[in-house]
Figure (cartoon, rainbow, N blue to C red):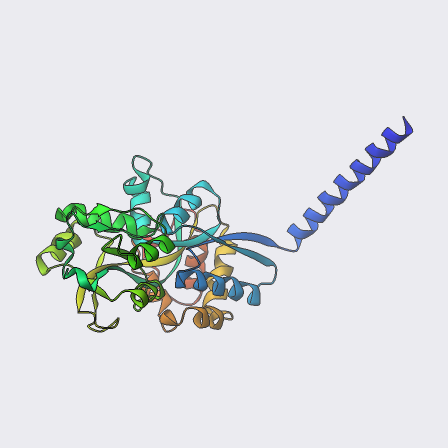
Length: 330
């Protein structure tokens, strides 16, 4: 009996100590956040590692863990499910999540909130040089990987191709598997959403000469009219060894959270990213080092996070009314 009583007392004391510790952590303002990032093969993964360092350098009380996900679609779904606190998403995913289309068909949700935008991510369609293909409309009946499984590039590629009547034989694969399939000539081409030049595309080109393909003028007009979250982007001739100039589409990529993330936390994340911790992500993601983040953020069509609004207003920016969420508090 005494043993049981002693065990009960020990368990009770442990529980009390745990509650005290939790209350102390909360009192000190400590926060633990999970960041959803794309595969490690993507330069965007390095960006979010840089963001984690930025936050830690300014706010040591905010603990962040970078989690590797499949891509923007996977991350956006995890945001909707509350499995990550913030992470990478793109303008097309925010639009389709809100509307309940694409990967979120018949499940519209307006709970996503944009923390900040940081870059354009062109949708790069590449094929083997020996294929002789010059435009995307030549891919019908060709074996083509629409992008790494779980990435936003898959949705964009298929939406654009379906609109234009382009019907490849789609080959579903992860990014590493797509590289191998291209090297072994089991597929004619693949797709990647990322900065130009992109490290993934360079890996593909290292084992097999490539060509970059795009849309015609008429096709581009149709696409931009149908998909308001896309913009035109031109890949310059020679962007990759021996490649042509190509007109493709691009999305804006962003650090995205949900309205469940407290306003004060969102404020701190933006401040750490744009002020004291800026050098960390600039070093990790140099292609966007000189981006005017507030200006690019204002190109959004979805609500900003309340913390982002607070920070931007504090710094004297005139935040467009249509970007201010209903939960924002002065």
